[in-house]
Image 1 (tube, rainbow, N blue to C red):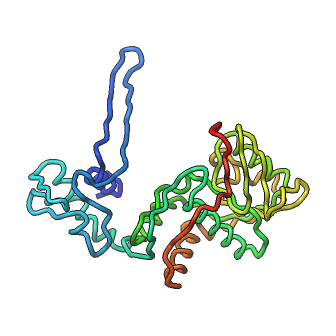
Image 2: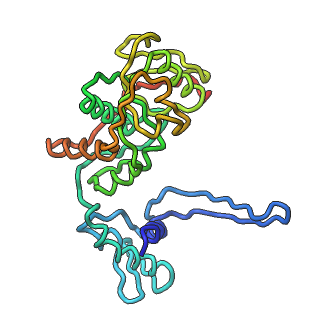
Length: 288
């Protein structure tokens, strides 16, 4: 059984009703469209299981009959086959179902700023500063690197691995203020990405203000920037490494390593995972 099979099976159990259409035109060939809905377990009552609550979360299969958590019974057919595939995969997946923390409220990925993006980049900044021994003034990340929301309740290792699945290392970059400003101006004109250390205001696709420590960016100053390897040379159309005075790529430390350390440190200290957006990004109109 492949990982892809398990994922698709789980989707079939948990998804709300989506809809797809296909049409064939003689001139243009096949054309497809699809609308998707947030997975909410509305068909079966399934939720993501931890290592010790599989039956309560996913249900059971006896013979060719599937008994869903919400009480529905499916005799044979695709649903029972899918449930069987998901249940058979659970022992192998048990190690990533370990509870590593707790969040009293969910953190939902929202642009141009949210609690989840702030937590992500602030944690990366702190890690880069520790590793480099250099002052980090600004953090630059990308929303595309945060793949799922952080759920309320127990946080599983699986949640974090799903949130940060890409093998991108943390990086220190020294940039002149003028080059940093150019990156922020590009974001203002296109898409604002994940930011830390700097506070910006944007209006009409223009960068209105950008301050670090309450002071406007000095074009001649050298600033320490924490980022990830994906964004150094074109990832998400960002070139953070362009014109850099210095680049230190810590290719032995990936994003997931840093984020897991943060979650585990907070948990060991007896603290819930709680974060709040602080208004570091302000869009003054709807031009974006």
